[in-house]
Length: 302
Ligand code: HMG
Ligand code: MG
Image (cartoon, rainbow, N blue to C red; front, side, top):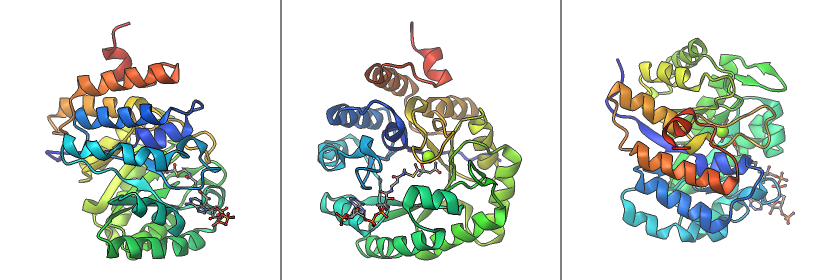
């Protein structure tokens, strides 16, 4: 069966904007995030506290995060931020972040290109981050990239994914997001990975899915995950994004396309599709390019 309700983890302001050629002004990012909250999204990934040279598009994290204070008035909204190491955690905690995400890789090549570490070195880098965050009662998500395929290594073995997934959970992560960083997954592979994670005692209730839409499979993959009992789905408003350190990664599953499907299935999200679509169309104006989301294009008057 399908769940009655899905929590959308909105990543447009982070995964989306980190990969756009044009750097969006800080005030526009703040307005984007505020409008996403008004549209009913309750988990809105805001930015990353990474090295500014690695992701220049998000180098304004210190200026942006304080502008989001008033979003607390919109409702019960959490604003997770990416943190790779203790330096990033210090920066996030100094600004009052209450929800963070570390981001590991199932493959060595991506760990090296994205974090300048081996897989195990990156887990060692995350260990004190997760421990300190938990001690401060800060929510911790663990991302796991390249769960289905890797642009340099090709197909990724399920056993290899399960090993790193368990290691992230053992560090104390509250949730785990399975990343199809380059969008190569298909639904049978999704079901096989979720089954293997269940068999290894990673509970489905802790799992979110993070699909990129390179081959147009993101919605089908999401449906397979919902049928398996997953209730947390990552998506990016307007289908923004990609990943700067993974060649051939295109945008995430568009939040509008996801909401269109969930509305049709009678699955609650709390999201107002018209308000969300208007927000993505407005942001597309700032990026000087149309939204790649089919639903945004279908619902936006010419
Ligand atoms: P490194 O060069 O190994 O860093 O990079 P280091 O630890 O050797 O430190 C070097 C210098 O950087 C030091 O400064 C540090 O203080 C500074 P110095 O002492 O030389 O003056 N530094 C920092 N400065 C600010 N903030 C920090 C920070 N850390 C160190 N947090 C590092 C290692 C992890 C920092 C680097 O590789 C990095 O920033 N990587 C981030 C890459 C990234 O953000 N990628 C995109 C997100 S992942 C993704 O998109 C996938 C996902 O969507 C899921 C999916 O689709 O699969 C999540
Ligand atoms: Mg991603």
